[in-house]
Amino acid sequence: MRGILVYREDEIRRNAFAVAEFEKHLCVKTVTENYRGAADFVINRSNDYEIAKHYEDCGVRVFNPAELTKIANDKQACYDLMEKNGIEILPTRYSGIPAVKKPVAGHGGQGVIMLESAEEFEPGYVYQKPADTLGKDLRVWLIGGKIITAVLRESESDFRSNFCLGANAVPYSLSDSERALVLKISSLIKSDYIGIDFVFNNGSIVFNEIEDAVGARMVYAKTDIDILNLYCEYIKTATGKG
Image 1 (cartoon, rainbow, N blue to C red):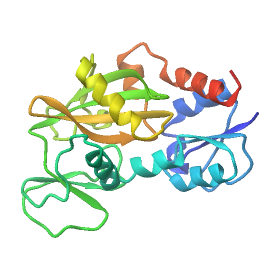
Image 2: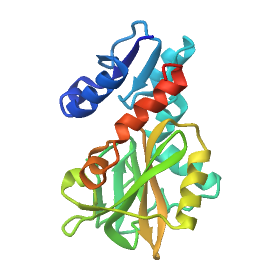
Image 3: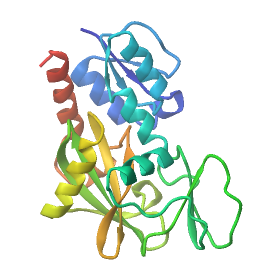
């Protein structure tokens, strides 16, 4: 059984460690987002749901499913899904000031700005009320709907708390109520390997976004968990390779 690992061409080098781990543990072939060749299973790390949809239509198992990839890479649709299902979010389509303006399909804090003056809503962006605690958030990693670990990120110089932008990070122990919230969110849509991000507002965690092609740098830097190996073992079991 031969699988493929899909990354955008510009992301292959930046994710060299992850690529090597997938190739080592699963003997996958790494391809770019334009590849549509044969595969027995697909690990889609491109954030492009159409790739997953193509292979699912061919009866091929894809990690993560197309539905998850589509919703996770459309922030407004994701917020709407959460709100519809009773998950607290910070208000979107927000016309007050200050406001956080973020690209609908953005990642890693890129393109996210804090508006200090009103502007007309621009297509392709989410306008959201800021949390009352800036520069602090929480990421939780899940494999097959099971919580693996959580890391708290804090920045002293930026309202964005992304690790890749220089924020500090420390392991975080979820409370029972926080674990219940994470699992409720996870239950809303089938996934294989994701991160769920939360901001802090009024002293509690509030849903912020789902990371589809979630990174593992913080896990390896701050814990002793070999999370990519765990994910590969999960894939082996799911595909009958285990």
